[in-house]
Length: 450
Figure 1 (cartoon, helix red, strand yellow):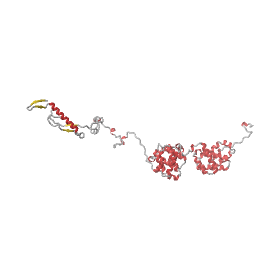
Figure 2: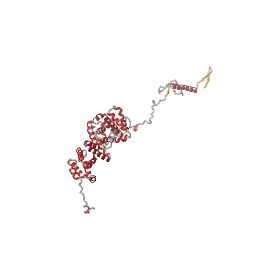
Figure 3: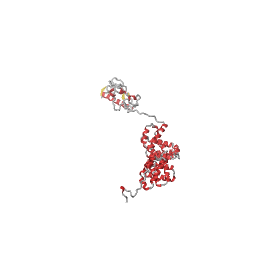
Figure 4: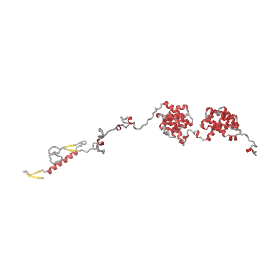
């Protein structure tokens, strides 16, 4: 700082450094005022007060105009325009791609490029895909309720004859029953209710084999639900239908075709109703000891799976009961319950042996009447009757050892059966001839036996 003399004393003359200090103090106060001022949501704040006219001042001008101080507030993520995607923003495909572009110069699109492959595109046309391989399949209309019953009933009836589940599966695949698949198990069970235990076992096997191939668990559950709903009508023709439907349900659960929770629908069934009886029967069978294993034979053992000795014993017993009661109808029912039509030749054989052993005309007449009834009603096939007689003829030498008068009795019984049409007349010629008694003087080579 320099001083100069004056009349009144010492006069202070401001120097350049003093001016700089003043400017700095003013700029500092302006910055502090800017910090205290509100930022106004990120907009620039203008603070006045810094005068121009300073040659080397802060943010000043030389022409003496008024200047302003701009302070930029920080921005958050939502208001910051800076890209954070990691892309540079260069034109796509060298400037030939993107919205509103015509493609690269010299690029020509062929008809193949113009085809629309997306089937969901509104402009898609299936005719454009003719070059691609495709299969043409015949689509059959879905069967109506009447057509369904007309086609399914003979399929199930034939299955009860041959027992081939694969044949049933192929027949069902030829029919369009997509919305009525659940009716297949319902039809099989309803038809089996009127049959014997063998057919009921076959119906359970059919449901098990169709599960996973043609029927789902929901289809089977819906089918059994329909059976429960129709149980009142089924009971009119089959009084024990509730118990049998309960066995079918338990067997299906044991075969993993139905969930065990299906039996819990008992709470929805009215008390003392047929539906409640069926579900109760199923629950009892499932809760018994080793229930899942025992349910494999819930319908009993089929005739063809029984031991031969057991079948022979049952046949001899029913023949003895027939001779005692002379009830042909009861004997016929017992024979049919055996369900072994391929083994009925044993029944004929045992009937002839019992006739020869008894040696009375009453027994011979009763046995002839029984065989005639079996032949007329076709319970025993003609070939089974012939096989039974032929077995007696073949083993006659052993039979004659136990029954001395077997030849006379057999010849008489064969003639009676031939006259009544039970066996052909030609069978009378097959009766073994009576051997001539040899004298003591006769021997091999004319030698006398001693």
